[in-house]
Length: 346
Image (cartoon, rainbow, N blue to C red; front, side):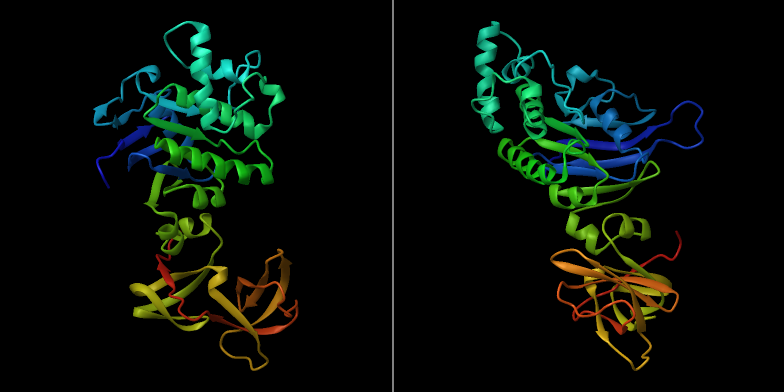
């Protein structure tokens, strides 16, 4: 990584006399212009971590550095960090233009209103400056909130579940638009979500959190393909977990012998994504013989649920697959698939 924009080291937060920390020893860096995502289940500490970076919560340990400057004890208004809240926090009695102008400093009000126009244009809202928040769609309101944040000349922008209030179709379009705006401005961003698809599609790098701890940090493709443990494997996408005995580069499993992505020894769990498995009709009772118990049509493809001994597997197949519940099938790894061996413990 180049010289980091943001460096978080050992941040810790405990509320009251709680037995466990809301955030425990969190450390990561964000590069200039990078979109960094914190993902985890509700209550895992991601919003608390964001609030410590913003200065709204005081950590009991660790440090926050922005552009090399220690801002751990700095008040929020001195950090040059902008925030886009989940509910956008627009002033309902102000127009879009005046909401943006509010973040500008210096000069007369009419001058600030004129200076707000380029920021509205940067988020694709030319000609809508006179509209009030209740006259704008949810996606437009979100872009006004982003324009107002950009008007404050932040070095870093924090986005806390910014798409959760939008319906599915608008969420996808707005997510793409916001990502392009951030790319065009070059401002670094930290994005908090519990949505797997958002994390994988929006971020340059992802940090997966659980119970106040950061379990793994990496590029979305890297974490999806090489999860560190069973929680990461199951939370960041669908997966099948199968017990196996590893012997260096191969492992013996309910699917037979498989090739491992990295050497391992002893008892392991294999993480296999549904798209990495294939099913074929089979009446021969081979070792990897099972039966389809459910079929979920999803438009472009189907998910087949296959009972393989005590294991219930998800397998993705083409939308035109003729296989139906009750069919006897053989489950195999698709050609070229390497199985990921995980520690067997929870």
